[in-house]
Amino acid sequence: TTLKAVAIMYMKLFSPDGVKGYNLLVIERLAQDVACLQAFAARFTAAPEQLGSGRGTGRQAPDVTSSLLLPGTQPVLGLAQQFAEADELFQLLLTDKIEEVLAPDLRRSRYPNLEPSIIVLALDKYRELLKVGKDKTIYPTRKVVDGLAKALRGQMVAGTAASVLRDF
Image (cartoon, rainbow, N blue to C red):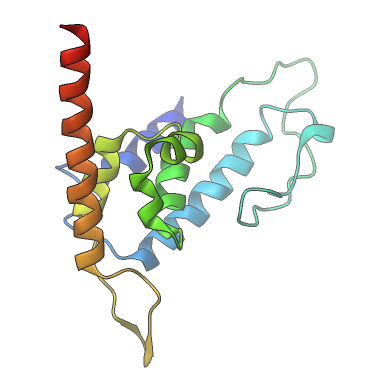
């Protein structure tokens, strides 16, 4: 579908051939775009009484009050789910506790659609934003993010080695 292609393009931003770097102001805007696309897709996947307004997601999605399904048509299952990986990545990058990505159980439960390798690629492209206007930002420093990427790489290597020994 077209929405699947759009979701893939969001993730390609963080591939080796994607953008050279990003700051969290860009991620905030991309997260808003994805929330709107998910709300739009939800209108094709659910009956009007099943649609909500983004409660419980940590951000306010546009209010969706009616389905776009034509009479006699069937919903497209999983359409809004196409954006799950991008949504989880953006939420991870915007969290106040980004260091929690190093806790494997927590990472798997909060971000089940994200592979550690994708997270590392995204962290490698992070660019620190020290100020917005005259105000300092609350975003993590490049040094902190680099440390997280290095530690996550270490977990990936240790996990691979452990699985090889377990299978031996």
